[in-house]
Image (cartoon, rainbow, N blue to C red; front, side):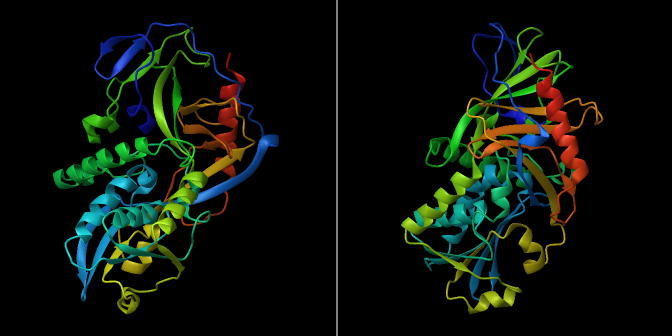
Length: 373
């Protein structure tokens, strides 16, 4: 339940245990979410670039060029990219050339380009696909920096320190971009549950103090969900279609260029005029650089007709008459629709719609919102 780690306490809380508060306040009233099969307007599939050992952030020599890898963020690319991209740009400063090529035009490529431009680089992005056709456009998306990120047994103290630095940078940057231009805003998130939650979610062990905020437990009668408890938190919401387009415009306005091009092997990079290359290709790094650990986590989203009055998110292991209890799903309202998700198929490369998963996700939300008071 990665989302639970990132909330802020609600109004007039009474502290009980570290990281967890119990609310003392009137019941929460929420707008009705109109979920139904007749409301679906599209379904999308994105292949998240997952590495069980975590993202790669390092520099190496490629003949006389500097190659900086910045890929493998799993489902955390939208959350971490400003941080890892700043760190990649600072590695690039170690050589004198101020011309840089960025491979990839998803969120990691775009933030890499912006961080390079802020440091005086002349940047060209080379990509096979650009927004709205990148994997980043298929995100839910919120600030979830541990989503699909790393297997605990593969972590090292060095990698953890790198991660915490990236989170600290990225969390601050996203807060500064909040507003309509970038499609970033704060929303309440609710996690219905019948069991009193762990006051310290497992994901908190990875996070720096700046991103460890409390959760508020709403008791029976204080929330409208068909469960005993509901956990309330506040979360940064990112609307990909707005956010990525704004980043593209920022890159171009700062003198950057975007060229449509596909590279087959590392030797193809030798003909480039830039001596600094940032690899933000995501899943493409498996074929281009032969990364043996890189694999997709197939994510599938169901998009329903937007509801302006719905301005809260839900997530959790929601019960449904047609699906086993304890299976994770989530909802995020955006201007382009009510987004339903909760699918993560490990090492599945197809982008075909999984009808079984589609039914599970829709039915779980129909059951939840149909039972709300």
